[in-house]
Length: 410
Ligand code: C6P
Image 1 (tube, rainbow, N blue to C red):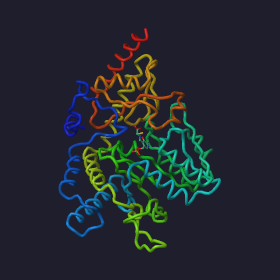
Image 2: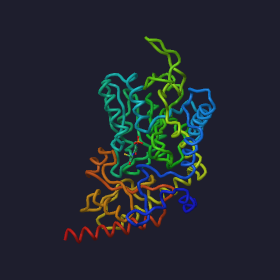
Image 3: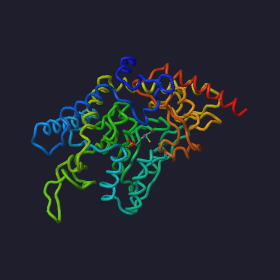
Image 4: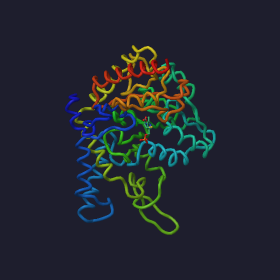
């Protein structure tokens, strides 16, 4: 992959922050946007902005055509059987809530079980806590190995006849663990349960094929994969989606309405009440084009090798503790860490002075921090526009921060 050519496509990277070149290492929170995505957004708003599925005028027809083409493009990106299996939502959080409410509340009975694990983001935990509370279902948790991978012994122990759904992230946003989701989906299916995959940190970074995974649901966010904010996707197997009731009611999701009752449109429109994020969907299609042109295998190789490069160097610095699988294991494009004696927020503030953007805190994943027995962590996350030289710059800045704090604390 020609990273320098990629970087030229990202105008935001050309700026100085505190007088230093911006080193953006926070793509797990949100990615930057390349020219083709910015152009797609600009073109939509400048030349054919209109509401979809409503008008028969030229602009509305064009907007509708591009919106539906975007759905088909996203379906191809994740190898979905067809566009009807792609629901446009706001983000991963909304996608998972949609399943927890529209599927969970209709299907879960007292004593049924939803299986999760400690590395889940709050978005794949709290919707299930709420649904469990409303239905009387129980949450059960898989164990993790000491290095932060799913412990297979617990899979056989926890999954059973009461399991109705397994919900698991494909890549942890804190540990960087890549979970064997195809095997986990198969294990869920063996006990008659459905499987939901949180793809927020995987779909932007690696080839994801929902047909090969055989998952029942996949949730992901456009803003982490070069598209604009406010557009996300829920993939669902068409037969499951067709059988589900809508999540939101309102305009455009209906077939016929009387004062007393209503019937629904076919999938996917049954789930898209109200005016959708048309520009967002179009930007997501442009993002899929951009990523596929690079090749998702190359995108994965690039992010993962930067993460391994950072990990190897951090492990050499006394007082730096890194989390997640060891160096010889696969890893997503991120490394979470702590520098002894420096709170991650202070570290992040110091790095910001050097132009480096990292994330600090619990990354909306408190349970995995409890599991690690730490209150918070710092995290460097990488994407297609990051370089090994930026990792070197981060490592040098970490050394300087350490020395500075050692000096200040005496
Ligand atoms: N993690 C991070 O900095 P939304 O906010 O809905 O687009 O994505 C939620 C989400 C769900 N699952 C995983 C594994 C995630 O990493 C995220 C978002 C960001 O780690 C923001 S908290």
